Length: 434
Image 1 (cartoon, rainbow, N blue to C red):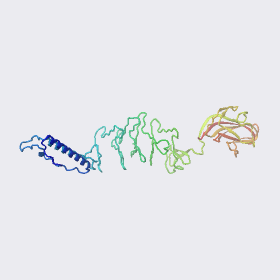
Image 2: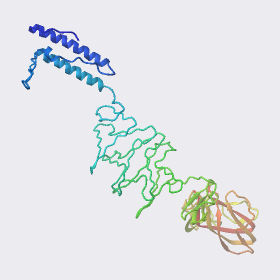
Image 3: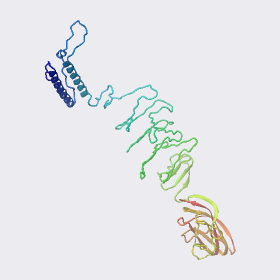
């Protein structure tokens, strides 16, 4: 620092001030260049400032400073502040000590603890802007971990509250890992517990948008227990609904049951062949009943009997009538519409699309000679069995049958293996395979 002489005039003082300002600017420039230890500052000689030193034995006395002394003292303060600025310019070193606000703190391998006996909260982070109140990140551990040693419903490792309509109490997002993971070793308490009050939802899982066929709203995995458990005292334990797809999908996994495993009553198993089995008796493997398979007829729907055909009708559009005779072509009959005694249509879809089989009463009347009729699906032209038989002319018989139909057009064929007969067909129910 340049030696500045004592000024005797006002002009001299102004010159000194300008010189000191120039030196302060130089110090500030040097501070900006420094990244390590602060510069060593010269010790100011109080007597050089023109102050009158206290005499020995006089006791404390006020110190009088000239204007030059005050200027030099201010320069020392500026230099001290500059040194402090150098020391605090970067992140706090990786060492234990007081936490500094507004700076990045690095504790190294040490842990930082905050203990409180408060009944409300110990640590509050509030962000009134659009950013996060608190962010926890980790390379391989937990970004946020909540522990509790309390008991009862009021104790929680992590609790999230939200007041807004579209706000989230706890929001977990992940590209490949778990957004939120709950873990417990208790046989009573779950790893994640959601409570819905009033019409609220305790836990809601939402998957991706349209086309995200691999997304999962909720995914439960278990080695020996239940992947997902639903329980209710008065309402449904589980409600599933879907607008454009199946409400519930049981994914086939094995070609058949694991016969060495133990099953409980109520278990349902779907094979890769499309067979659905239901356990009716617990055991290893227990007793099972086949509910449905690709070869089964489907759900049976009984109906009030309706007439769908009478060979004695005359003048009915689109309906072939008259005696069925030996050697004649198969008589194709549509079973879709119910009709009056004269053949007029009552319900064009009394037997709905998707029906695969029927329960019927087949009646023959005004027989000639002897013979039989076979009732087969539409498109079938021969049969080695009979559905009803007669042995003489003028007989009338009825027989109850369960027969498959051609589902594509809801038709059956009548095949005559005898002299001749009239035939009537009434439907009492159908199997819906769709």
